[in-house]
Length: 323
Image (cartoon, rainbow, N blue to C red; front, side, top):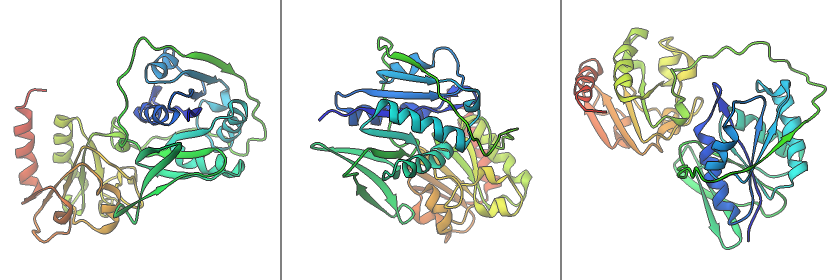
């Protein structure tokens, strides 16, 4: 049975985020011949609708309002709710990002709908859509479905591969005006604290440091290797608590949950809280002086040694590999 699916497309630094295309791929799978719709909030750049069309959108709703140029819970909740009432989709999908984690439950609760969050896969079983999501810090997976009303779900970044873009595809573009009043919070300034230009949640390669880096300067060899590999830099809670780096870099149960193709853990012992945030990485490499460190139990490859000796050697060797 075909379904109409509405996707929220996200921007980052003026560009469409990769997770938007991944969610569109999930939407195409669910739609099964139905209509795939995408919504963009705020003033964007030329060509965004075409990009979304190339990745599977049949209709793109452009909701321009100055209150939507910077994300705020109140403004986006009002606008998103109006869009859902307008298009009446069978399924609504968002990325399980900072914005998605805040917006999806707020809107689902307002519409008295159920929500399946942090999904890593979508399965079609007959006429039913089944979502797969991790539980118990990634130690097990459960399958869930919505049996009544609109299906509402968030998709974890870097889990569902985006489709190949089709430059011949076009989408109907619809400009929508919404009235946003009674805003209780006003965003005056956005101060960005990130580990670099690559978003941790979408990075294909992540190199993280733990207490074993010993100081803020201890991240220097990690940063050097990250430049060579085009990787994002993360950290354990221990490194953040010690003041070696900003909490924006934290990977773990109380930080960011990541699933890169390659995760390199440097000087990280492997506490269960950290493992909860990265254990689903496709390949895990651990570098630690302690051969009994718990991180080696989940690692695909382990290097027992001093990270300050190992990382420069890796950087030197990878620098010889042509990009």
